[in-house]
Image 1 (cartoon, rainbow, N blue to C red):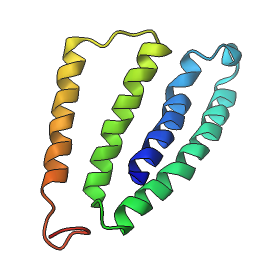
Image 2 (cartoon, rainbow, N blue to C red; image 1 turned 90 degrees about the vertical axis):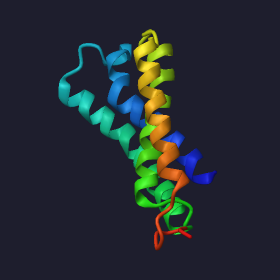
Image 3 (cartoon, rainbow, N blue to C red; image 1 turned 180 degrees about the vertical axis):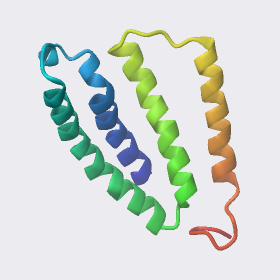
Length: 122
C-alpha cells in the first residue's frame, strides 16, 4: 500500500510538471526555458516520491521491476484522467475507456503470475 500511495503522489507531481504549464495562467508569456525550469522543479518532488516507492515495492519482494513499471503506468493514466477532466476540461470518451480496460488487463496479467526466482516469487 505504501508503494502505491507514493506512486500516486509522485504521479500528481509528474502530471503537473508535464501538463500543468498548458493551463497555468502565471506561466503565460514566459519563455520556454522558464517553463522547463518550473517543470523540472516539480519533477524533483516526483523523483523524491518515485524512488522510495520503487525501492519499497521491489526490496520488500512485493513487486518485480516489471510489475512496478506496469503499475506506475496505470497510475499515471489514472492521475492524468482526473487532471484532463478537471484542469484541461477534456472529456473521457469510449475509446479511451477501452484503452484503459486493456491496461487494467495488463496489470492483472503482470501481477497475477510471479515468475519463479523473482522477488516475491513462489
